[in-house]
Length: 114
Length: 120
Image (cartoon, rainbow over all chains, first blue to last red):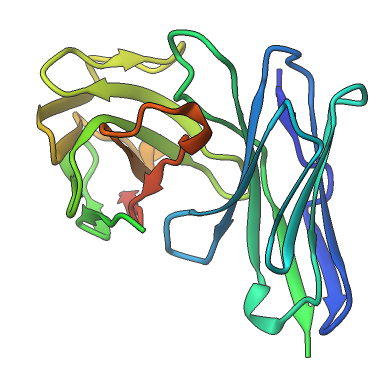
């Protein structure tokens, strides 16, 4: 039972355009969401996060939107750059004793075409 | 950001041997370290959570006698894959959480570069 779903395994976007990566979750206990970026043969690096008390968080070219009623979040990258080409993982955590544990989606491979 | 290293980056071994993977936090104290496994085109699957000085907590379906975890210090955790078999071939990644951070809003896990294990 996958609690965090990234239904698009890949996405291609032209340089300069907007990239939108989507993530859905099923566990209503999740209250903190993170996006990680991963290059081949490297570990994931933290990109941006959002708490469930917010519906938007922005950091430079990256914006994460959270729709709690739909249990959906999205990562917007604008403008997209070739260096953004990587696999993006959505992750979530729930409060409680294991609140530092993360549940990951399968990832979406973003290719930004020059 | 904080740096986490893993060693070795790749290892090829024969079936039946044991392999040890080290995970180190280089510039912070990691009271909690996590071990993940990633199969091709799959998500990172949490195997176990390790707290310094105590026994690791394993996720359901992960054999604790096969995947031995030792978190002996605030900067080092090791994962030993005992009697490795071809189905254990995978990408193993560790992450560490800065123990000085108390606020979950700063719930960042810093990941190591991963270890590619191939069991022949």
